[in-house]
Image (cartoon, rainbow, N blue to C red; front, side):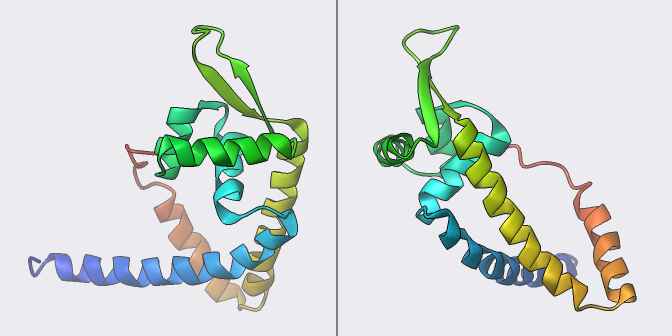
Length: 147
């Protein structure tokens, strides 16, 4: 690695580690949804990202289509998603979160955010301000072109 990249690399490593710790803390709340992590993640993509084909969803979740198909079957049996022929291509099936699926995901998200809010509440005003300033910068980073 070039010498100039070292400070950015070290910062990225620390950010990565902190993000993982925060997500692990928040993820403990996911059990209340009653979904395995893969299904919860797929439902989240549909709720917050809109309807997708099975192939699109498999690509986003980085799994093979047969694996995604099994997850969607389970979510559909639970009443969390529905399938319908795409309006523009009747051979293509669009998967959409149901109203029940949206409610389940929003409640799960609220529980996760609550855990993080509790952790942030334990910090001082200056520390929270520093995190807010850092988030302002992070939110301006260009989006991932592969997502």
